[in-house]
Image 1 (cartoon, rainbow, N blue to C red):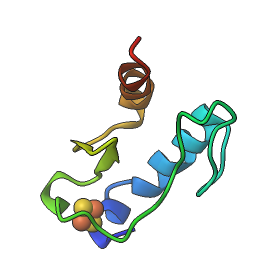
Image 2: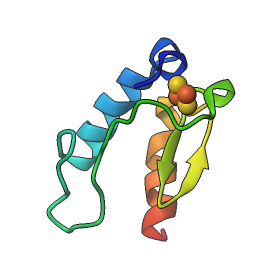
Image 3: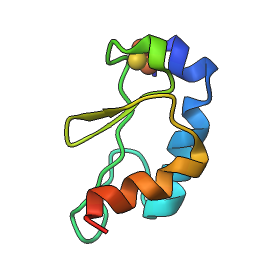
Image 4: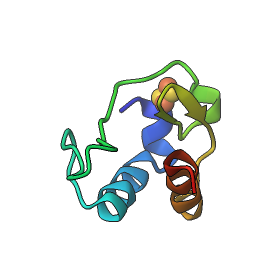
Length: 76
Ligand code: FES
């Protein structure tokens, strides 16, 4: 993970994503819908912490937003 995302709580986001999805890093959920991967930097450091889902960038992500983002991706 890049420095900006690390300093702004990226590690906590990964841990919460792992908890909500029931997987570890580089592991696919049993339904094949999600995997969680950590990357070095995606070049949006000013928006840190950043995550991407299916190519869509989410910036300034807060833990409280993760469920909503996952539901959005699931089409709920
Ligand atoms: S460190 Fe996260 S986008 Fe650069």
